[in-house]
Length: 321
Image (cartoon, rainbow, N blue to C red; front, side, top):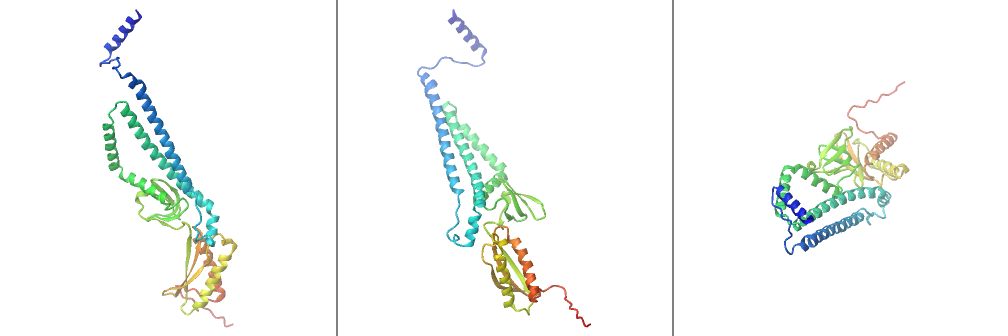
């Protein structure tokens, strides 16, 4: 009786269903359905996870090596090398942030690719036709590429900017129409603030050139104008003395990284002769050094009686009393 009841119940269920269902397992298929197919699917998933772990591990090792830096041998024995060595923790932090970003991106891409391959393989083992799925994915990818060209270009440009370390947070950059200090670097948009406090959002795909004023080192370039009848040898001596005293000043020990140079006469202007002095400085410190140098040069010129030409006439009043 129980067997008849089960047969009647199964027949009732089959009558209700709108399609034909066969509960009979074809001959010779039981092993494939209940042993071979599940074992193959589980093995595919396990191999996919193991391969993902291996790839992510390899990426982490590459990222760890890339995050380590050293001072080049050419600069190791110079004051610039000492400066770079002192700043290595900051440089290391920046390199680490950049490499971690790229490592996270690479691991995400690798995970997506491995997951896609494993999914397609599992579906094929379940008897699903994967050719239409792959074709549909290709069509969707093509449509997305055409419909979001600017977005894709922004992301690709952001990836290469981070990978090549074109600029980072805190750098003073010139991006064409926008110039200022970088506050944020993303894969799609770069945010910077100019000297007036205006925040600029620049799409990475629209950046055609980058002028980084604070990467590795900077240079203070001062053009000092003196009258045509001034003794130029004396002027250059004074400029060299002022620059050297600034270089030796303890307050600028970590700011000026190489001995200053007076390059001599740069050009002739309508107001006088232009003499150039240069100082190699730490990143983003060239403006601080320039302001200090201008103040010291003005004081030394006043003591030496050297006048800086002006655009308005100077009248000397003589006291005859």
